[in-house]
Length: 305
Image (cartoon, rainbow, N blue to C red):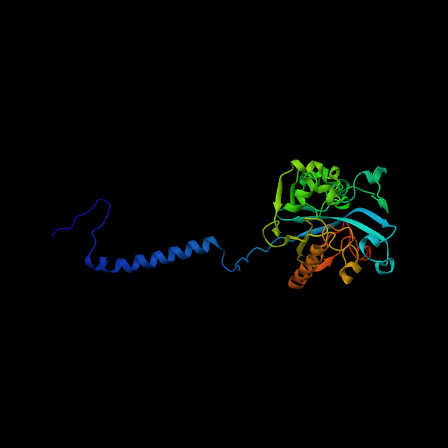
């Protein structure tokens, strides 16, 4: 039988047809190898998985207080060791956003319009002025979270009404409710603008950026919704920013809460919970107001990583 010949081709003998299958298989393998070589140059090592970008934490100068008497903090002058207190704020720069923790003394301290009985207040530079040195404005701050709404932690909050506010539900209810502010010694004029801010009401622990490196933990007692901040720094190691869980090192050593705290029993329970957090994570506790610790810190424009 005469084979059918397609124009432009040659007839194929039975012998050639027998060897064609293996040949095509070899060509397919070679083609796959050539494609793989084209995608990744020979001799280059496999790329390692991407490492998370480092955090940066900067301590801003947000004021000073000098007490006449530490008795309201439930310690003696001898136990306190010194009567000056620092007022820091913290700028946390994460690959996925920026967070300001605490917002310092009120603007009126600079002009002399705001005073406090029993303490001398000082404020040399505002948060905005310091942020400007890093090329930032309030519009660049994605989140603000205050340990609580006392005047020395929220004094400049109104300048950051455009940021997303992270606050415990109990603190928000006290701070923005009709009667709560007076009960907790809040002065609403310092944070009034945040009433219209985008807000997340927290009911406990909150992982700010979702990777476990910046986490808010509830620590009620000083105020109804007091909170502390865990920050896991790559080079420095993990730290916990205390808010007003403790004011002096002596408060921690003696486990004594200030007499003006909202709830004494809650405070002691929160002290114990945070001490457990420190033990579980190996974190260092930064007592925010402690002037002795402050002298050991690197302040803005320096930073911790």
